[in-house]
Image (cartoon, rainbow, N blue to C red):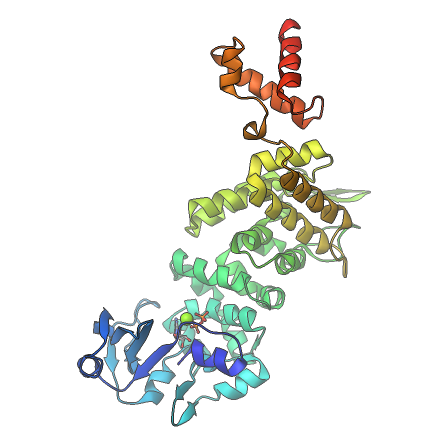
Length: 416
Ligand code: ATP
Ligand code: MG
């Protein structure tokens, strides 16, 4: 039923199977009386049967009328599978599978899977006005399956995209992230920019924006879409790519050398923070994404800078930032590929981590206790440790207890 059947037909590995039945909830309880059953949403006809892995079983339903483009006012049960399939959003999600009867596909979902098409079940305008989130879900399935919308569905999606304003941020965020994770994300973002920018209006100025730069082949929005698609499939990283240049239109000026965007990394980080908070992203996502955007132009030039990046962002965060930089650079010129310089940086960073070279206080061959024994006290200790770490990172001295102590003595006698 739904996504499971679709993925099975397409040969995509699929996990959560939804089962649907003409049996009413109380009949299901009777049928499954030998199993443990959790009455997950029994009012809506859903129970979870532990077989022993949990399987959701739902009675065929028809949704009642929609008054808030969100929740149907009521649901009622039906004995007709066709009616249940008719309430589903897209034809590719409206195919059922029966162990003896095979596929049941009253809306041509199979054909649409073959053609790679997302098509609303029934009249797209009516379906999108019942629940505007479906507009974004259409883009999400295009991205996930690398499909395109059929013409009438696409027209309705674009012209009704503004209705996403009325959808809760939490629901939009879930679909947005799933959209970013799809293998067809580049085409989905560029093909349905009206829908994406209805969720993030700040992107409107980026669409078609000419960067007037010899480093860039594409308009700003296309550059962003390519950068997202060049990132590994990591939700936070792809969010960072989506928002990394969002302030560029506001920072733009041009002279005889072309377009310039002073401070755009910092400004984009600030805008990204506002956008993510508005979409109710969790704190750790906001923190990571904003940090990477802020530093997305600070390509480390030396070992010392690489180590400072590791110190600031942790190995995982630093690795992700380098990936964002790579995606950004690969999205500038057609067929650019991955920057050799950045690949070398990443290799060097991995070496630093593997070989245990010091980049943090923890890795220092000296600690507070040793300094106390050597007669340091109070605030001096922290300052001395910081001085020692700086000197080791800058490669002025070796990470060796004796050398560090000698260095600190020298610094102190110099009155520093
Ligand atoms: P995924 O594998 O990404 O979870 P899915 O198709 O299972 O994809 P879900 O969001 O889990 O997508 O929804 C399950 C099924 O419920 C869909 O296939 C669709 O038939 C139906 N559905 C979900 N949300 C809606 C909606 N807003 N309007 C209509 N039908 C919906
Ligand atoms: Mg699902």
